[in-house]
Image 1 (spheres, rainbow, N blue to C red):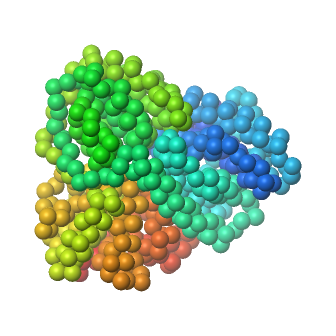
Image 2 (image 1 turned 135 degrees about the vertical axis):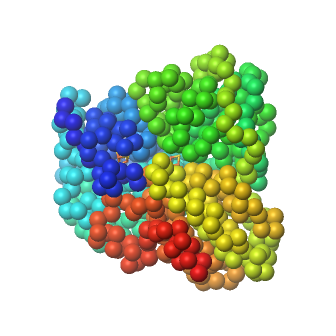
Image 3 (image 1 turned 30 degrees about the vertical axis):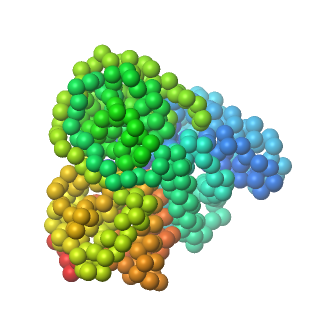
Length: 544
Ligand code: FSO
Ligand code: SF4
């Protein structure tokens, strides 16, 4: 097997150019190859489903779910298990081959729709269909920008789908856009339009997930979350899948095992439906990249429901479990499809014989400022803006990461003028959510809406403020955007914000390596996208 790879889909890509020997994330070339192949065959399947729809045939939800799950598997830090990815490629080929037989006009389909092969041929094919197989750097850049946006969209729709909410128009678009990334007749202009259209569906996807979450679990409320530990053994649940958390809470009830959230699962505490569980103990640790130390000291089992997985140390690998799109070789995986009940009994049994978590910190943090809760406080917020008590808001949503340069966000938060309020969502918040930034007339200076997909809430809040202040343009609000990105969900959030007309977004700590100079120029010229500078310069830029 040839040990070569090329991946530049995340912010931590090697040298800000591309991972070619091994992923900074820990992804090995042989896993990268199968992810490339999975993306390719998923695009092939999408070309087939798009053709079937054009011929007036329907595509089943199972096929839609297969496509979203496949994309989710290839997101940064989600799945490192080559065998599981090979299984997904085989399944996709078999579904695609069956559907291909139903297509009348097979001649206009791309090569990916026709290709099929045995496992022994997978590596050779993978080497021919990776990112660099598109030679023109601008076309490659746009195809990847769209594909990464679609990966983020797929992750969000998958979370809605497991709550039995589907929106066929999103799947239809997602698949047709995947198919278009294979179409050599499309040039830069068409792909720029497709990029912006992807943002529209990004809004729809986040809206669908918001509806799914709030209909099932209620509207997030202002909540104070414990950071300390209790005396019982515990299970730590990470990732973004609230349905998995719900099943885990149900199954741990009365067992003497507590459940703690980690990283992006923290916002689960804000939902009324989960507050009824007395053993839902609190949040343990920080953002994903600190998990090596924190999973070690947690002492009990850890369940990864999605990314972000850091390759585990041997010392706790037998306590790391995956489910859904997540996977790591040698870690046990809990199966369970859409609408099925997962069986977490083996995790619970393991927890019972583990010592309780070692305390990392004490105290609480407050969050739950999603749209409904903020609308309930709207008068207070509007008064504070009108009186000048709040001068400006700064959206600092997105992701955290391990690079030292991200200390910028902590410094930026610390040095913000005292009349500025941070609106946040996603794991980016861990850079400043434990600083004591105080409040303005009872309004905390860090308003956490929730997970990265709850950036949708921040957009709704901005639109509401625009309405209240009678403005025509969202960009006239006293609102700045200083967003931190890491992986592909942040890409769909960015495209969604562009679709909503937000201009002058600052994106850091570095701009995506997958933006070619020309594509970056399009974003700069049309949307005023910019990178970050020094904390001092940026504070001056944002707040004068
Ligand atoms: Fe963070 Fe990871 Fe939620 Fe991402 S845990 S980095 S943008 O998966 O999805 O915010
Ligand atoms: Fe490199 Fe990021 Fe790709 Fe991992 S996901 S291989 S760190 S670019």
